[in-house]
Image (cartoon, rainbow, N blue to C red; front, side, top):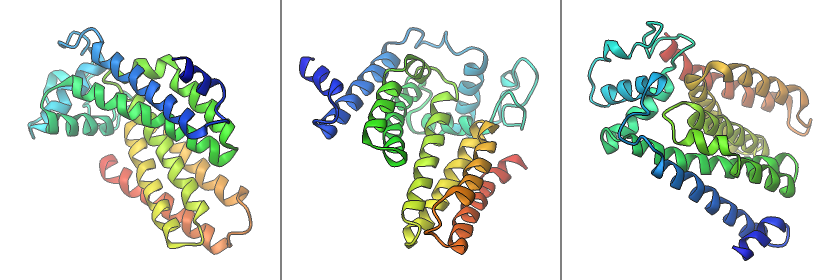
Length: 248
């Protein structure tokens, strides 16, 4: 532990070892929490968590959604209401389809995803500012207890946070490789991920507008206007193609 503490206090001396140590500690913290979280037998699956559990299991079995899962306000869990979103139900259903009706599988998966979010925070900070900024931002994310807490609950926060970070990471990559064909693919993937984020929470819709507009007006002029237009269009169109079918 003394060596780990030294690495965490002095990330600049051994950047790769420090980041690896942080990610390992973040994973241990999250996965051990979700594994030993009380209520694994189902007594925590109430309110929204109960709805996601019931609808996810029904979808995994290709059964109609149970009427008792429509929530306190009577909204269908796959409707366009502000209470429930379809995206997280798809996420839970996919895990149940693979592992069976096992909420622990969702929690462990979210523990892994939450750890990946720590790395994405590091990468974004490094790309936008420098390695030290990325490190301290990742350290804050790794030790942020609400992030650990929500990884153990069948709620949208962990998956939604990861999708936002992944979309922005891919978007940065598309601009860093704007002059090559890989930039095109990264822009499309960023838009797809942004659309998936919106299916989990519509709060990211303004984020799509801000990312697109900000990139158009603020980015370096070293990228031609036509190429900027192409990347922004691919990003927005890809997001719309993901959002539209579910919204309709």
